[in-house]
Figure: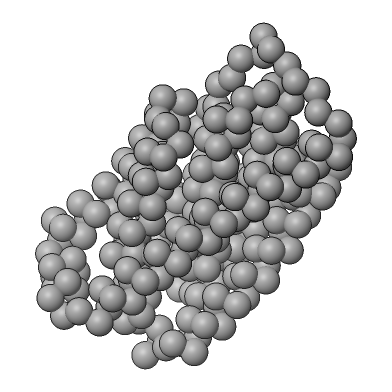
Length: 240
């Protein structure tokens, strides 16, 4: 994701004005992320309780993989087109993605008990909140950590594909712990990046760009939360 903006005109708010505007913008980020998560959960729950929809998605390999590929393409498209999309259109695409994600995540309700899903959600929420607070308040520059985490994430994806064929339980546990660590780190990194990007837009006097940063920020944190939840569910979830 690359947000572009013009430095030609700058606006210098007071420190208190900047802090207030930044808090408002970050509230929008978390609010939009929460709406996306709620939409995903609702769609997943409805799907899990509909035999017709389940058969359509999980009984047809083409449909299932089509959804997964469609989700990936949609995320990439939002990131590439964020500077051209209106905030309303970008928000709509984010929510559409969250709904699509709910279709494939319905499998969670079929595989794990409700109590363990609830436990994983509470654990995810607590860890996510702690990491996001660290990212928002830390004075340390996390940009270098971002590059390291990106490489680690690529390695995790490659190793997961390899283990799909190896089916090694030992490697599966290693990947689970690695996934938790990576997405905890990404939560810290993304939160700081969102804060810095929002502050830059506020200082440059571009409110529409603040909205775009909020939407991309909500998408980034949404993905961090979902992936952290799934890895924690692997670790502490009880299968039916």
